[in-house]
Length: 118
Image (cartoon, rainbow, N blue to C red; front, side, top):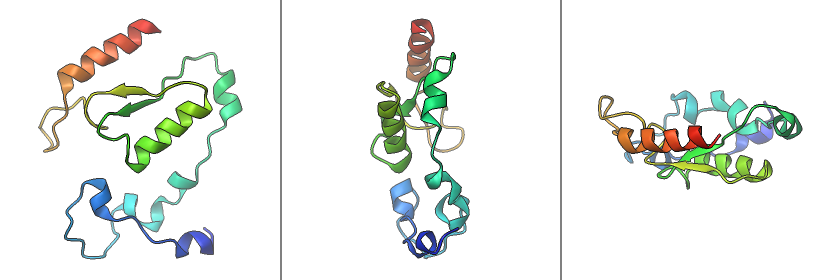
């Protein structure tokens, strides 16, 4: 891990939909220096383009503007395609069983469309 990375400010939890009353701790692995491999990962675009497997880059419509959504859009662009947008967020396939309900029926319909198009 570089000093430059360690000197960067850590993300604001509110940007991830977490409570705005931030106590300043960064114990969550997604918000701490433990996640350095995620933003520093660079996919092998040539290998992805050469793959015989169909690659569908997807993003939830509610996640388009957050960090993970923007990375999905950028990857799709670099692969010469548009990202496939699914209803809701990254857990759009789930009901409310974990407190962050998606749109499972709409998600399933979109997934069927994507799979049938392939």
